[in-house]
Image (cartoon, rainbow, N blue to C red; front, side):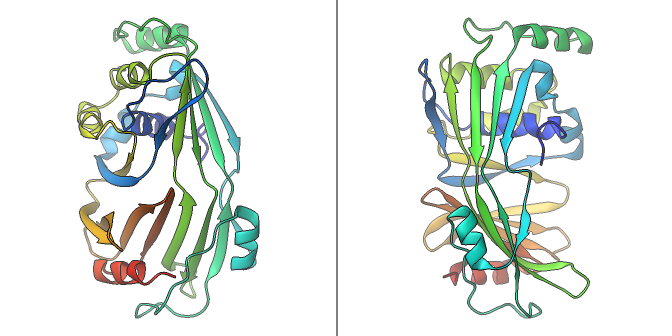
Length: 272
């Protein structure tokens, strides 16, 4: 997904990661966030519409891969990304045949805050911009995610029935001002829904929990474990789709598709 083409999603992505880390940044790039587990962040369609356009508060520069693309096989995916495609043991009932494979390269985005742009955006919305902390103007946050690989089983119609993917988990680094200053200011920006900001503030500040935005009207979430690691289960309210997501040693893995929760967890627990 392009940050330029999806500014609201870009805003949420940056705020999500920023809300989860709590190490002060130095004047040079300093790692401030490394995903060790995931947790759900409930959002509504109104929340997504209401999210501020991040580019209105500064400059967003995106570099790296444009998106997933097909590769011939698991070996090609591994050669391109350096990641092993998870091997599925027994396929769930209704999932048949051989998978196709996808790969995606590393994606990096840098947000540079601009006090002038932020003031203009606030004035245009008729709301007051919170006081800009000293040193924040011109400071930067860099987010990096990927590369990633996936195996996809599909019906004859092309509809996926099972997706098993793995990627290097998101990380972030910052320069210019203490990290907490950037995080707290972004959470106070006009337009960020109160319920989203309140949820983000509840996450631990040790730089290890990555919130996953979840449409609350369509998906239910619950905690689980995969091989002793904390995981998040997502299930559509009509119970036609389910997925489980977890992190192990800097890699985030997802198992999902036209499955029950039990089937998704069985596949996850049996990955090679």
